Length: 137
Image 1 (cartoon, rainbow, N blue to C red):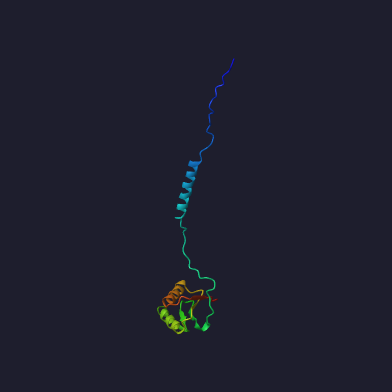
Image 2: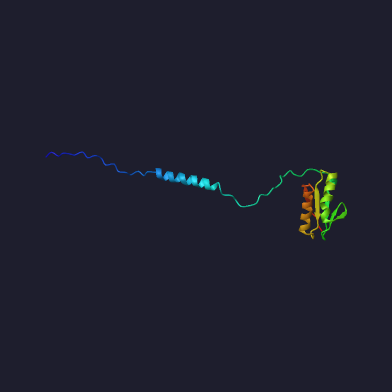
């Protein structure tokens, strides 16, 4: 008996995974994360710090020395000054020595309010170079 061998068409099985949709999803997620990451802003305050070589050699006699005593009295140029007249005195002394800076020597028992008052008066007088000297009282 003659057997007829019927040639069957080979059936191709789909055994490969199509990766195109997964790559599309990955790229969409990548774009999403890049766009959202640019909107994140960290909380905090901006601090203006001076650079390291900010101190110049200035003559000591050009500095305006402001002393604050333990009882919140303000002394400028060896004279007792009213807190409202600090700005005028610093303006006058700064006009005499434009390169001078303000050096505040505050007592440890003086209040912070008086120190800030003198610093504000110095800035209003146009002197932005303010130093605080250590006073071991």
